[in-house]
Image (cartoon, rainbow, N blue to C red; front, top):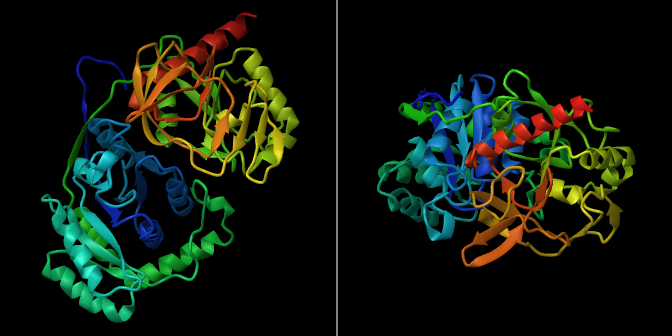
Amino acid sequence: MSRAAGRSFVNCLTPRIVIAGTGSGCGKTTVTLAVLAALKERLKLRAFKCGPDYIDPMFHRSVLGIPSGNLDSFLLTEDTVRYLFAEGSRGADLAVIEGVMGYFDGQAMGDAASTHDIARILAAPVILVLNCRGRSRSAEAELLGFSKFAADGLIKGVIFNEAAPSLVGKLSDYARQIGVTPLGFLPRMANELKSRHLGLITPDEIPGLKMQVDQLAAAAEESLDLEGIVRLAKSAGALSAKEPDICPGPETAGHPVRIGMARDAAFDFLYEDNLRLLESAGAEIVYFSPMRDKALPDGLSGLYLCGGYPEVYAAQLSENTSMLESVRLAVSREMPVFAECGGFLYLHRLLTCEDGKTYPMAGVIPADARFTGHLQHFGYVTMRALKDTLLCRKGEQIRAHEFHRTVSDAARDAFAVSKGEKQWTEYVADGRLLAGYPHIHFWTDPRMAERFVAACASYRKERQQT
């Protein structure tokens, strides 16, 4: 990709389907995993998640063995959503897009950033997951309301989740009467995915997950109309997307800089497309584990500490003193470091966890952090840079997402943050260090990735000269 005169277009013919829900907890993740598991042996699949959530894409990855992408119409422009979908689904036989919350639930009681918004942007047919546990005709009323609420009629199919088999026939007949294709049902499963303070427990923490996924696949084979789902996905038309402008800096073109990427059970919350954008800007991503590895990989010119659950794995992180010292040394040498949410916590002096125990962390940031019993800032935010930083220049504005139950004593004054009428400041910016709570999608403004890589290239050049 390059900044040539004009912008080219990417055409996408990938069959696609959105699996939406009537609300949180209706079973759309369960249905999505069932469909992915049942079809993965016969089709080349790609999976996506509407919105900023990190954990559902982990489950997609656990089933398919390949990364899942996020499609978010608050963080990204419509052109960027289409482009990332087109690139992420290239070569696939079928793309499955899991919705977020209820189908029409968007920002501030509007449609923006809703599953419906993503379905509209991608011109994708929608399968509604309707939970029927303890219900009969009320399920029909809900299906009618959802199918007729929007005039575009994107809801083409329905799957009845946790439905009594004796009711499925009548529910299916009603769906056909109102122009919605019934695509089967899933019975209530014995094993249910559990949750914790930030959402679902990650796949690595669920004993016997493979067995549960196999059970879902078997249930899908028996009671879902898989051929009908594929047929509906193939009804989606061609999609055209503008190719964004991405350009490697002159110092990095042809000479990738090595950026260390934290990746293990404690650090696994990131937008996969961020990594691809860094690579496009001239980076080589090198993975390491703050929990297991004794030191940072050799030859790094930058460090990316993504979000995760450091408060859950604080004991292991704290015990790995050689890694903590390696991170401290890198920061002291002014290596560019970007750390968000969990990565930000890792850089603190002390971290107090949910059980009240306190653990030493890297000590790069001379402040302490602690778990609280309630949610702190949550949701989409707009951030305006108050000073030049590793990613942004003073006055520039970006969008981000914040979701955490910890608080920090660190003075954070790099960005003015707003959410509705609420305003506060965020991010520690100290030289080439940028660390704070909000999660940033680099495709919000690709210049952020270019600047990060350029700073890493400058660091490499400085080290080579010493």
